[in-house]
Image 1 (cartoon, one colour):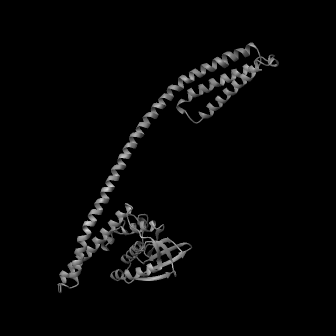
Image 2 (spheres, rainbow, N blue to C red):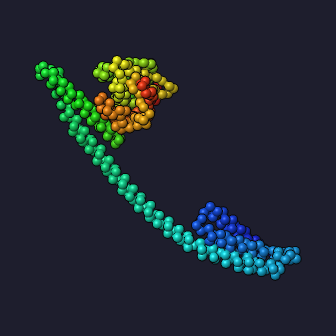
Image 3 (tube, rainbow, N blue to C red):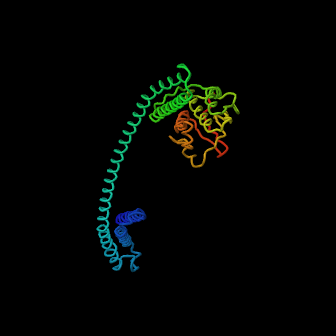
Length: 360
């Protein structure tokens, strides 16, 4: 009885090994399929011999030629099952092991290549980070060094234009106006560069507190009236919510709104109106600036909020565009947890809008 139990356990173990090997190698070892198949065949023959060995213990099976305690069965058990199984197993291992060693060497080689590539990537990332720090420092230093003298030059030119030094010849006054406007343009570019550098380094300051967006829009209408007059455009209120409170930085949100208004004024035809509106949609405030300018073509829609992106570079230069305003506005709005976007139809105008969370 003990022999039957032990032989049955052996057969079950061999059966488990055959099933495991077949299932494990079914979708693997394509390059080593021959050796792997011989190994499975070897264990299969050992299982066959074990099953025949079990049948020797049952005298009722002795009348059968193969199943039972017969010479034919003994030959199949000893030579075909056990001896054949070990032979196939040995041949399979001799074919399979060198292939595995080759795969191991290949894996080691690939690992070394990946390590070298990783070191190169780490070094490249470090170089880029150093270059980025140098760029940030350069922009910051140059911008600060330029802003002070430019402010002084602008102030002096403004005094001369105002007539403090006396009446100026028409030709000289025209040249002073050009110099004054270009100084304004340079100061705008420097301020935008400084803001961009602070945004990228995470150092742009925010003074977050409860802010009334309706009051902010009304104040923006007054502040930017002169800019609208300069461009022959009138800023007007359209649909306006009674009250819309949010938690944010009033000055930074004013910067966003003024940027959208200045863009609308620059690209609107003379005599047109630019409409500002504030609406509520559930827990969201939407501030919109609608113009009747040329609109935005499909070619520029994807890049409109990118740094230095301009709808029409030649036209934008004529209208003092830096290509940084919308990128900065997007960063400020997203810092407030909001989103910025636009709707536009070519030839009919554009509506730029940003959303903020409503606070109560």
